[in-house]
Amino acid sequence: MAAHAKLSASGSKRWMSCPPSAQLEKEFPDEQSSYAAEGSFGHSLAELYLRKCFGMVSNKAFDAQIKLLKNNSFYTQELTDSIQIYVDLVIEKVNAAKAISKDAVILLEQRLDFSPWVPDGFGTGDTIIIADGLVEVIDLKLGKGVPVSAEGNTQMRLYGLGAINQFDCLYDVQAITMTIVQPRLDSVSSEELKAEELLTWGENEVKPKARLAFDGKGDFCAGDHCKFCKARFSCRARAEKNLELAAYDFQEPFLLNADEIAEILGKIDELTAWAGDLKAYALDQAENHGVNWPGWKLVEGRSNRKYTDEKKVADILVGAGYKDEVIYEKSLYGITKMTDKIGKKSFNALLAEYIIKPPGKPVLVPASDKRSAICSIASAQADFS
Ligand code: SF4
Image 1: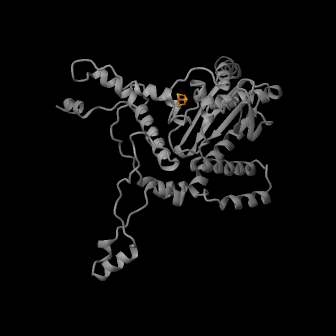
Image 2: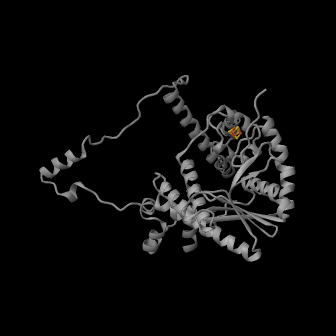
Image 3: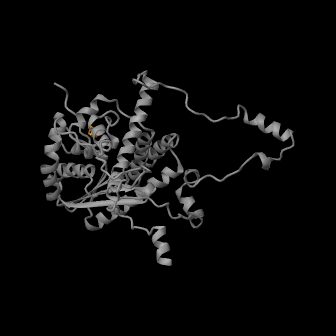
């Protein structure tokens, strides 16, 4: 019989939506990304700063550890500034908790055991604050992609269950706040639940799905949770769901009507994400693992011409009488690179008033999107006339 699947808190949205994915993923190797490596480095740095703030590490030990961390290739001013935002927020929350209860407890990088709901389930809470029956679990996320909401977030809720499981007998936990801090996106999001509500969710929602996932049972279900599934490239359920569009029942007349176009629009993002994943997987397998896809072959792609020796080229042109300004171009670093170079703090202090955010190009999104609708050019012209 196959070994049971490992159910992580970070993958919980996926295995709760598609329970057999947990078992299927075991057939694929772990995916290591440099973002994840930078993330764990950032967490070590944040933990060290917080330990220093709360007197959990001596000055001598701090100096020795920070010296080591500063030599790491992931150490940048921008990362340090981002972590400082998180550290300041944690200190603020700890002070507020101490104002309520002087015995408030703070725990860093705490193992949280949620195995009463998820077989073998545990995770790590970056910061836990406990005061007067209230527990707050804070998670630092260093991604630069999109803000993640704590509302209904299954990973945070599992950490919350773990906190109740471990601390209820000591602190009689009444309510729990789960907070996600994303300093690089200026985003802080929280969800607060009564302990009872969270326990009910654990019993009714998590437990049955975790059991199915652990045993590799249940139905496959494709959706946006496929994005981080290790089986996403070759999963049949995902392919079938996306290929449903190809089987779209096109009716006469020959032109699509507004309802049909609207329906197709709703499927395109997932369809293109799936198509991109499939192409990248097929290329990687062919190029790096010698896989032959029937009817396909590897060829050299297009390439651009480039200089073999830039210095030599410049010498020749200068020798031929061309001036520097004709052959060189100078440009300022872009905003992201400049922030990396000089750090977020200096960037904001020196340049904030010289940064604008021009209106973005119009995009079509579902009506449920939180952004306000803008007028089309045609309707603005109609209003004007
Ligand atoms: S790719 Fe999607 S449908 Fe397929 S196993 Fe993973 S989560 Fe389930």
